[in-house]
Image 1: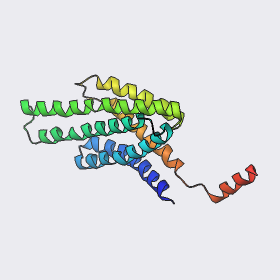
Image 2 (image 1 turned 180 degrees about the vertical axis):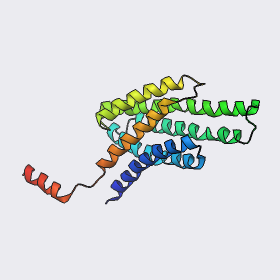
Image 3 (image 1 turned 120 degrees about the vertical axis):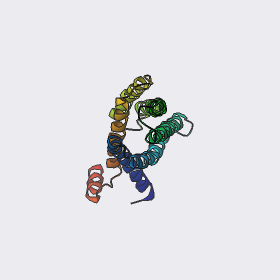
Image 4 (image 1 turned 90 degrees about the vertical axis):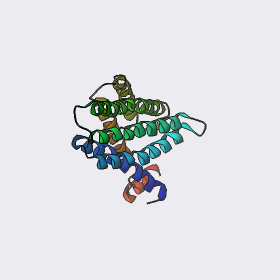
Amino acid sequence: MNEQRMLARVGAISGIVFPVALFAASGHHAYPVGLIAILFFVPFASFLHSLLRRAEGTNGWLSTAAFVAGLMGITIKLVSVVPELAKNEVTKGTALYTALDHMAGMATVISLWPLAFMLAMVALLTLRSHALPRPLGYFAAVTAVALAVNGSFLHAEFVPALLLFLLWTLVTSIVLLRKTRPVPATATQANATVTA
C-alpha cells in the first residue's frame, strides 16, 4: 500500500471513529472518550480538505475556508466541555450551576454555524467539481441547512442537526474508505483485457 493510499485510509477511518465515539460518549457523559473522539475529526477534515483542494484547483479558496470552518466548529464544541465539567463541581440548582449549564449548551449550539458553513462549501464544491459523489453533496447541503436552522436557536437543549452532521461524516467516511481499497489484480487484468 503506497503512502498516499495509507494516509487516505487513516483519514477515512478517523471519520468513522469520530462520530461513532462522540455519539457513544455523549449519552453517558464519558468526557475523556468524547474529547478523544473530537480529536479524530482533525485527520478526517484534513483528508476531506485534500480531496476538495484537488477538485477545486490551487487557485481556489473554498476548500481552505471549509477546512478552517470545520476546525473552528469542532474547537468551539471542544470548549463546551469546560463549563460542562465545571458544573459537576457546583451544587445543582444554584445560579452558578445554571450559568455553567447555559454556557455549555450555547457553546454547542454556536458550534453548529461554522459546521454549517463547512458543509455548505463541501456541497458547493461537490456539486460543482465532483469532489465527492453527488449524493454526498446533496446530503451535505441538507445538513448545512439543518445546522444553520438549529444554530439559530441559541437556547436549544436538543441539537438534532449535530446528529445529522455526525451521520453525514460517518456515511462520507465509509464511502471514502471503500474508495481507498486496493483493486484486486484479477479485476485490473480483466479491465486491461476489455480495453485491449
